[in-house]
Image (cartoon, rainbow, N blue to C red; front, side, top):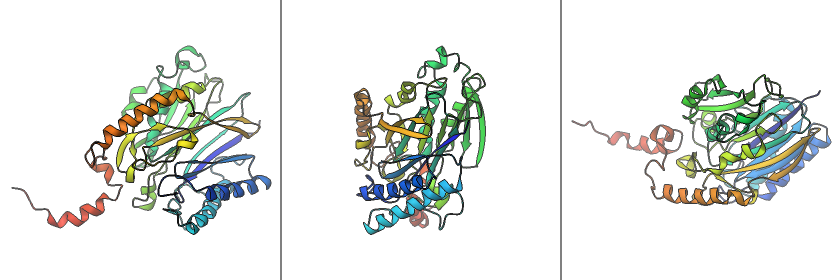
Length: 371
């Protein structure tokens, strides 16, 4: 059977106002570009969404992962929307477009990318997660919970097709290396790395041979692009995205959403320099205002049908997450009370990727030796 590819590519190309949300004219411009690409036969389907101030392009097609035509379409769309952002004098217009010109692949040029290629099953539920005001490592905790923690995912215990566990592909984003862990056999080794979420990031998850899903097909993928590593300076947070497949030999939809019932701490928030709770919100509530946050996550649910993206369902638009949101706000109050002190402000080694080094450079001549 012919495979379908789902590509989620995002970029912050101008906030309205400040860093809060995306102006509707940018969304309209992106929809025009996507619609034309679908009429031209390049795309099977598309949706244009936003999470906070990030413009999100979700596309289905049959070109495969890292396809030049698809990445080129995304780049052209972001460029067109950037022109609108500049006309409106939006904050940070084009800030995530770090390359001078598209050269075949959008990776390493600023935008975040998550792509899955697979043969559709009889029923193919898919969740597209989009975060704002945080870093790629923010997905380590929920992806671990979904695919490795039986206290979160009952299927790991009671479903024979999941009982053998999953394989995690982990990237060392600083030294540009990767390693695979078979879990639950290597669970502790996995945790030893992914707990250091600023360096080690879960990139993909694969099933094992006992799964009805082919072992070579990833069932989850996370964007790992770091803006600092591309730009060489702080230009904004990375605001990662993820795609997660569900059901029929994979974690159920409720198991995929369950980790976000706990508003765990992530790095980012104001100026990319603070720790705060990740808050699961509806599409309408994704705009970041309080201290440019707190960090948010939305979940768009789809059924993939012959390549069509049937949806989206606004999965966190649900009162069962009210307590998580309330708890997140309580944690936000507590963390904000620390002001410029750690642990609200990031530790010094992570502040190296913000604008703080510019302040330290001004002070370096004033330091004297101690006795």
